[in-house]
Length: 406
Image 1 (cartoon, rainbow, N blue to C red):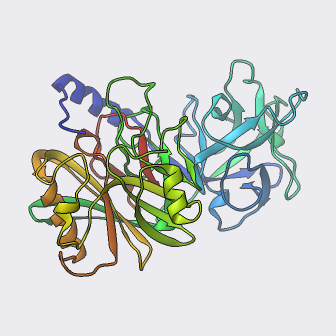
Image 2: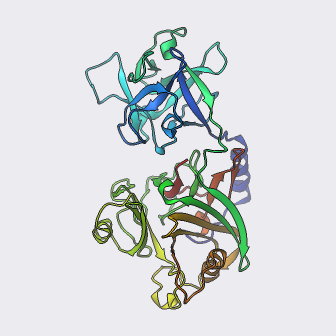
Image 3: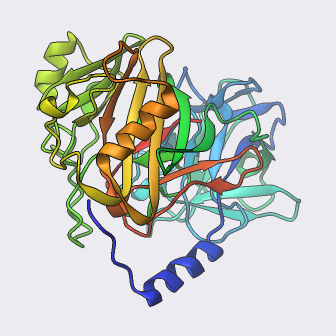
């Protein structure tokens, strides 16, 4: 948190990097053995160790995959559009004695989620292989029957169709569940994303890239130590998915910057003060689908200043502020970010949010909100229907982010 000081040379390097970066696309991955069979999550929804099969086309995100650039020779991950945390993975632990195949499943980033796309002589047809030092000869392989398990198997030759896949671009116009807008209130330009609570997923991106890394959409999340140490990926606020902390280790289990929490549990939105993961789960009476910690905004509360327990006082100044707000009636979540060269008072940011939502202090409201990290961390990146990336970004590597599943 705080002001971000960047040299001219750093800004130039950052802009050059942005021009070089190729942004992701959404695809169906279709078997060449049987063109009616699509790469598919076996069962509903993404999750660790969910197996991958081939199955007839559906309208489900379980058959939509996020790929940075299939025409690149660089290694990349293929993320499930049902949950971008989970990527295609070679499960070499499932049958450790098998050397002629490994089951393809979903898992979080590790050495066996990095893949390379190899072009074939047929347009838009690829072979997809692992990229580990000892796994480079293993290719994504499918049989031609519906529901059959997908494996990584040794190279069967460039003409073998069981190891060939056609990519079909998925229209992005209907793929985004959120709306993005800007609005200037109380002299502050707000960047706003509105999305159903069911689309929220909390992720620790572990300082791997600048701002919100591809392919994620969303905003910065909890506080962290901006100390230049890329291995220090602790998040200083509660961040839970299905009751489990985002990690690594104990990261996401406690609130050290504020005690407010917005939680989504049983299809309902709750806003509760709690300092630890166990305390929050106890107060909620169960494990939330997700829970994000921060500083309570006390929206609509005439006595908000006397209750304020956020490390930054209402009169604190910063170039960037970020907040998460939710409507307990409509189950909608709003991500608010402001980021420019001029310092803004925190109290004015709160007022701008209330003006945008039509909230007046001293009157009841269905809105609840928390402050997230700010300053040089404040950023918001989403895609338009045309595939363009919009919203204020930052050259700062982040830890935990609020991601939107799409």
